[in-house]
Amino acid sequence: MSVLALALSDSAPLRGCRVLIVEDEYFLADDLDRQFRALGATVAGPFGRLDDAMNVLNERGRLDGAVLDVNIRDELVFPLARALQAREVPFVFTSGYDKSTLGAEFEGVPHWEKPFDVVAVSQGLVRLIEGSAK
Image (tube, rainbow, N blue to C red):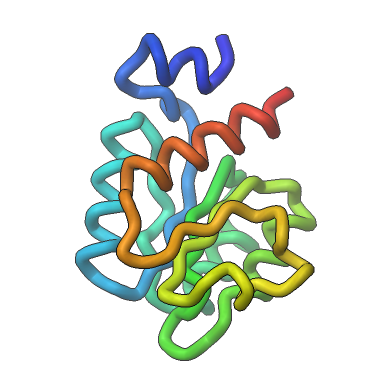
């Protein structure tokens, strides 16, 4: 059964999936963590430092998806986004900036402006994970 079909019939549509969360605002990070765990995901993070997130990507196995805040402690998350793209890991951006900040390189990546709806972000990532599983 597809991840999206599970989302409609199962309260844990991300069971067996590992999701990376990179967010430096504590309350948002906590909300995302709780949301993805409620959907059955194993959460890597949340990480509030880009170096920590890069270490997870490089050293700790498979990832099925990611939520990336564009600006982490005054560092742009784009090196991590490029590494995820190279590994074909679906991800979404969250940001206090509008989508134009992403530039052409990440034009096709879903983007939610802060403040965002945590459920909408998680549903967007579920759809991307399902699409990458085909």
